Amino acid sequence: MAVMGALLSIIFAVWLGCGPAMAERRVALVIGNSAYKSVPKLSNPVNDAALVGGMFRKAGFDTVDVKLDLSVVDMRKALREFGGKAREADVAVIYYAGHGIELDGSNYLIPTDAALETDTDVFDEAFPLDRVLFAIEPAKQLRLVILDACRDNPFAKTMKRTVASRAIGRGLAKVEPTSPNTMIAFAAKAGSTASDGDAKNSPFATALVGRLPTPGLDLRKAFGFVRDDVLKTTGYKQEPYVYGSLGGDDVPLVGAKPVATGPPANPQDAVRRDYELAMQAGERDAWDAFLRAYPDGFYADLAKVQLKKIVAEETRAAAADKARQAEDEKARLATDKARKVEQDKAAAAAKAAEDARLAAEKAKQIEEAKAAAAEQRRKDAEAAVAKALADKQAAEKALADKLANDKAAAELAAKQAAEKAQRDGEQKVAAVAPTQSAPSLSPQETAKLVQSELRRVGCLTGAADSDWNAAAQRSLTLFNKHAGMKLDTKLASFDALDAIKSKQGRVCPLVCDHGFRADGDSCVKIACRAGYRVNDDNECEKVQDKKPVATRENSKPRDDERKKVEAAPSKPQASGQMFCGSAGCRPVRSGCRLQEDPRASNGGGMSGRQVEVCN
Image 1: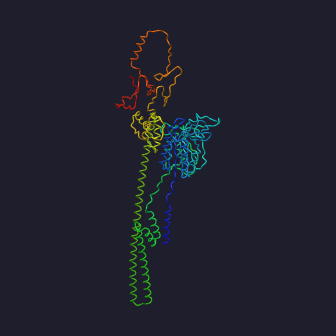
Image 2: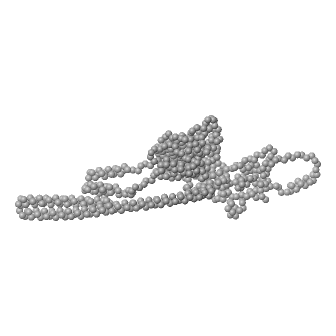
Image 3: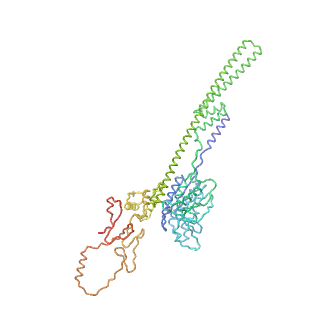
């Protein structure tokens, strides 16, 4: 019994000590800078940031911060706050999309309000890559920086050099991280530039989202697949590159799913193990201890059968001992020539004892048969449970294989459709409907994105901010009018964002006052050279010199002509409006005006179109 109790105590202690391992903590900071103030805006970084941020959220990261169009102050604050989160994390990742610059072999990330008029301004208005590495330094297991900032930099073309020998590179410079378990991934190899592509997202961001979240895939191999995808997409013009090194173990961004190597654990496994231990002991004390631990259930009934078997064996042994004692007494009396009566009594006692022994032997055989039958029932029940679990696992695997095959077929069909659309010369944005789910952005970030697109199509003249105010609602109403749509103007939605992005050029016409002409997206004053002036048609004409004539003439014809002119209707004046069509923009002709196309109200499908009417 002591041995059995010790075994049960050890099993219980081991069971309590085996708990699930603590899950690692992962944090990510995603930055997308598009709306630069001193150089033309970039179209893809905010889209890439939303796409990559959604990837990290789906991958199960504990914290994902998506920041868009950061100034130098906002960028400093974001890196400082993320450094605090990295101190408590095992894995820290920073993704940056926007402009970057290489100066004297060092790389810098450029905020949206940077001007960089001279090369020394880089030290004050941009962030060195070392500052980004410092923010993720506290992470315990993995530090990863992904830079989609290798674009052709417009700052380098206009920047004045204070030192003639100072080098301003093309793209970003090669780096060698000094901290262990640190990786830095570039969208393009050092010294080369990356492409934004023709789609909504850059080729590098698209490849990242397709490869990094693969469960169990080591990061080094995942970035190798990213490199292959980008090379194929860009016609082998852009090659991503990874710097740094990791250890020998695989380091996936998303852990591998556990693979079942056998039937799932049975809740009755612990009871079964204790039952088998008691069976090996084969003693009454072992079965008593088992029944105290498990008084009810299938295995308890089996234990009771085994206990009865042991009791029957003990009864048989006691009966056999009594029979042997009776035989000894009979032999002793016979040897001592005892009287025949005593011998008969001894013989009767011996016969009774033998009968009891035979009965006990028979009872033992019966109990052994019952125990064998019970043991067979146990084995049959366990085999049935194992078969049911195996069948369930096979059904689940068949369902998973079917889903994987269906997904592969859908991806193949989508790829074939995209290739056909490309061969037909269609644009990717118009040919392929977006398949990705809307990015998870705050209402303020969504409002800023919608206003940025409204500025692009000429429907918003003010600055884009995170406040969906009355001016933003009026601009969306103007877009509905000229684009023939019925978007809800009370809030900024992803439907409105997708609808505006689908328009490639200006939607709302540009109207300039008299004396001004359209120049791109703005009105500029018309400047005429000396001796010329702007006429009613917004054109420069020569000023006619009027020389006095000292001749006498009859005043009556002149008076008659003046009266005729005064009685005639006044000549229409130029309105100062601009008419924009497929051939460009021009002033409205003299005596003409712009009005709504009458065919739009008759269901002609040209809502918002204006025509020039001359009476």
